[in-house]
Image (cartoon, rainbow, N blue to C red):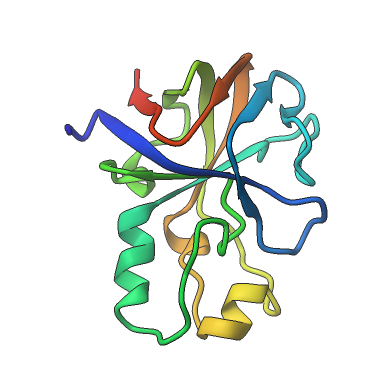
Length: 147
């Protein structure tokens, strides 16, 4: 797998902001909305959150709590790409949807669920956010491709 193409390990949603997400079989991504059924859906710049499995694995080596897909409130957990090195404006094919990176990292809530449990959160340092440009779906096993 090259730096230009990664595989989706999990797709996740949550019903409320501020809580960990849970894996689902499929997400539907729509322009001006983001992910159908996700608490963060809406016409704003952080419609889709992505995190690399490698980031989770590095933290897992340091903590005793079991880290699971969605623990960092990420919508797309992927493997085989250094997401935090992608510049804002990068276009990604996530499954069959077209997205554009809008933000690298974010300010973490001091009381986020995973920080309380594990003592650290990688999303502020290594997570990225995107908006949906063209509708599509994404499933575990699909590709994330840098265009």
